[in-house]
Amino acid sequence: MSKVIISCAVTGAVHTPTMSRYLPITPQEIAAQAIEAAGAGAAILHLHARDPRDGRPTPDPDVFMQFLPAIKEGTDAVVNITTGGGQGMSLEQRLAAALRASPELCSLNMGSMNFGMYPMLARYEKFQQDWERPYLESTRNWIFRNTFGDIESILETLGKGHGARFEFECYDVGHLYTLAHFLERKLVTPPLFVQSIFGILGGQGADTENLLHAKRIADRLFGAEYQWSVMASGRHQIPFTTMAALNGANVRVGLEDSLYAGKGKLATSNAEQVRLLRQILEALSLEIATPREARQILALKGADNVRF
Image (cartoon, rainbow, N blue to C red; front, side):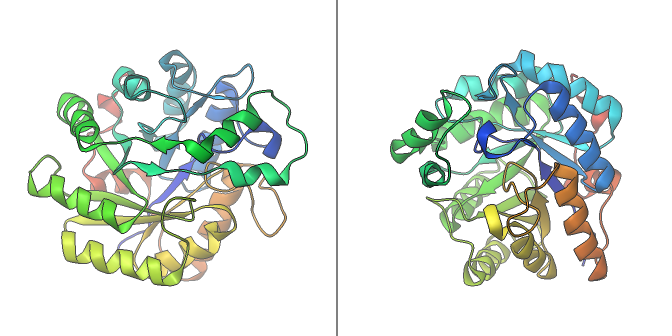
């Protein structure tokens, strides 16, 4: 078994400010938590941006550029910029930050899907910001869009145009077959970094059978040409990623995916989740990959070739 790459998704576009006072919002908070998470053992930092005025997700590349240089200066961890963005963003908006920054790695959702966040409404009587309740409620009718044409465009502009590689986010087994389609067409090249995602309403559930099935299908489709990683939302985060690592996966944690570091205990930082999972994995005799090793494993272009 090779070394385990820990990714940390620092803020995302799912949780809202009311849900945790520890969710990083401002560029300074995002940079500080990202650097701390890297120091705790995260080799990859998966990044979204927030409007510092009210905490809503933003695709504004100017906001990204307020924290990307600070992160690069503070750590050698791999920067992974979202192309998924958040609800209501056009494809052009979702790509703007990555096109400006030309990172080593970008996320790439492998299909369109229902993406329901509205069940979280039942947990909170009041919200700090006016945008939070309608943002969550509107996901009853939100379809995250990534058509075959959208994916081709992202592969062309960021992959071929910038030398970026991708964290292929697969929310269901069908997304693995979509990735195999692009591999067959030679629009993507190995090693593929496949992120299997579990527990999002609209995607595959966080069940052991689904985890093992996803691995079986990925093994059959990609053989030795991929690196597998796993994330799970909410309460499933730590136990599910632990189980995945024991089955040969890399892992992802972070406040994008879960706000907790134990039952009923809010994580006080992204680094707390990274440390918690790292301690578990090392106790199981698994070795944690450094950023340098992650770059070698994933065949990345290197931090000297980004634009921030």
